[in-house]
Length: 186
Image (cartoon, rainbow, N blue to C red):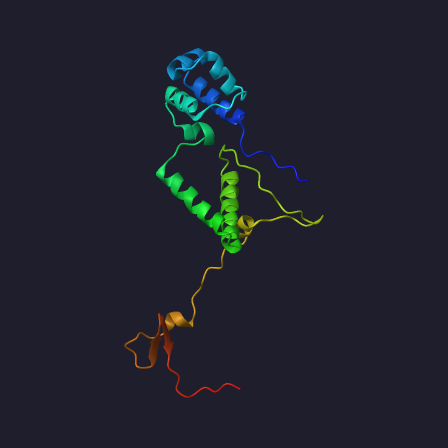
């Protein structure tokens, strides 16, 4: 049986409440008064010892001047965030392996960029595949950064005559020179 870490705990919510309360310079008693709860209730929520009802979380959020989403998820609800979450959810729920793979690579690339820019943000650990001893593990983001796409140089097509030239013809968006004779394939 595989052990999986819980994706949610009330102690995380309690930690967020404590951090917001102390950042605002409030005591547990002051927050309790602003939220209309007892100091003991605030203590138990911050300690992760209780599973508060949504109405209690709404009162605490109102006392801290934030939303319940911020207390539970740790980030405010913005239209941009909601749009990104909905788009990612749609990709994940589609079950399309290729689309999910591209989403994973995009997330991995963003994590690499954050690490390289020395931003002080917490990034959830990425589950990696086992790599045989002696082989270096590189993700898609590393490949993009270490092996940038080849830049196109000049070619014969750049020197092709314009459409007004009777010796050229246009197919789609490409211009081709008309040959003088027929070409046969063997």
